[in-house]
Image (cartoon, rainbow, N blue to C red):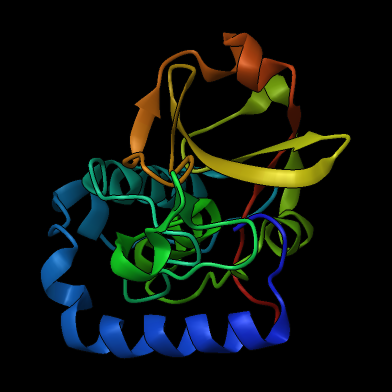
Length: 208
């Protein structure tokens, strides 16, 4: 999710997302393959040890399992795809509020779910791009590994989008209302995304 909605819209959307997720989430989200289900040997660290690399690959595998799920503004949480909602500017397509009729993910809902599911709950990200950026460790462009989060910004929309790096230059993301979760090849060579690239971050477990 890009900008944070008003308190009223946020509370309403979170409630609807939680209720629908409890009823439908497990059945709507595709089952994970073996690569996504294997338990990590250790929690991720900024040094990106081999066990941490395996955790990142698992997050990337979870993202791949969600290809084709619809975009829903405000959709997605720990349980998976959820009902979205609309605010003054988001969730609409051609004058129709698709958000409140669509079960799916927005960009940060997808990354939140992928890392929570892959880490068995040890990595919990907020449902806003800014929160996810601040909760994760910086990663150099030439050190990207599967599972890293790619952030994008514009002068008029700081940190407006996040995608999940899945290796070989590709990212998986939920882009906007009316689209499906999709894979973008060579994402940081595509002018649209290269021009807005604001940096990469690597999630890690909560510090208790």
